[in-house]
Image (cartoon, rainbow, N blue to C red; front, side, top):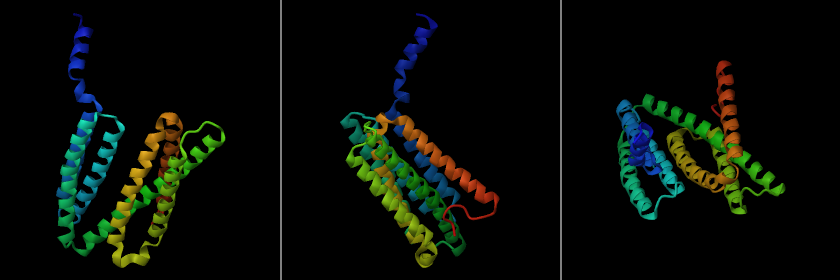
Length: 242
């Protein structure tokens, strides 16, 4: 047996280390690590709340990945239960800790500003991305090369509409200063739900137009980053920040 044949045999023997199921487990480890780091580094402030949000987003991403990679149903059920019990339980526990904690005013203000900053960029990206996907679906339909079904187009329209309403609420954040943190957490949950619908819709049409989807999303991301950098150089508040 030559060297290449030997290396090939070794690679096949350890192929389980780089399959998609293992990838989901690696994401689980990264999520737990990021959650623990947030809790430990921000223990004096809103570390528990940041940890709860990180574990929630991580769980949603991993569950979507498991559904998309097409693993056997029995394996899917085991992984889903594992993710829900671990990351879901971790997030719920940290959320309970955050609700009973009493951070000082300075830490609460830092958390609110950081949360709204993240929501600004996330909702603007989702809004522009969903709008570009709607145009892609409609143009492909008019040209006779159907990329998405009417159901997928309807879900993308709903995502676009609720994202726009969320942006309007973000723009009026100062009117809800008294409930600013609660409004931010509510918008975060809405963002997670919208991302589930958005990613699920893209997954259903990805095989028909992967290049266009990737290109449009890359252009949206680059435009947001360049606009933000431009305003920061001018000393102005970027995006929706008042």
